[in-house]
Amino acid sequence: MDSKELIDLVTSVACLVVASSFWYVVKGDMLHVYALSTAIVLGFVMHEIGHRQVAKALGYTSRYRAWYLGMLLTLISGIASMGRFLFAATGAVEIEVHNLRRIDKDSITLMALAGPIVNIVISLTALAMVPIVTGSARIVATTLATINAFLAFFNLLPLPPLDGHKVYVYGRRDLWVAAVVVSVALLVASMI
Image (cartoon, rainbow, N blue to C red; front, side):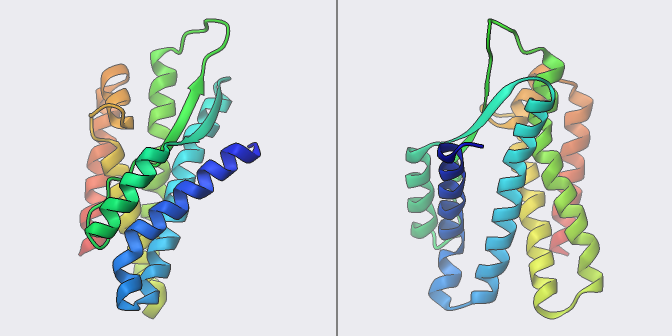
């Protein structure tokens, strides 16, 4: 990861943290600021790294690129709604194709599913911790489970340019359905 990519990723994460935790900062609820920050940093960064690493494993060059207009919209929506609604489009992993090499449908599917699958694994792990931790740790684990289940579900929506659209259009719809069902089940379980 070069310095430009690292700056793009860190800037995107900072933007998401500020926009999503704004209300808790105003209220002075630092525990929820910490829980949200942890969930977003871990969920967002690992989601994007998931895409990147699968692309690399398949022989493609990829990099995270920030979308600065999207960051501005994220900040405006987060602050205006006090963190209750985010237009969260701060950037994405872009796959570079060299020498006119075409990306096959299986590769598109695997690269697109990688991010949501990472969020599902994080959510499952955090949800498994909820019954065995107490106090502040329980709030962090619950927030981690909920945010990551939501990240998986949202990214699996079959709308361009989201991951779900790529899996639904280019990949196997049975994998898409399974991932959506698991993400919804995790979302519901994390809110109970």
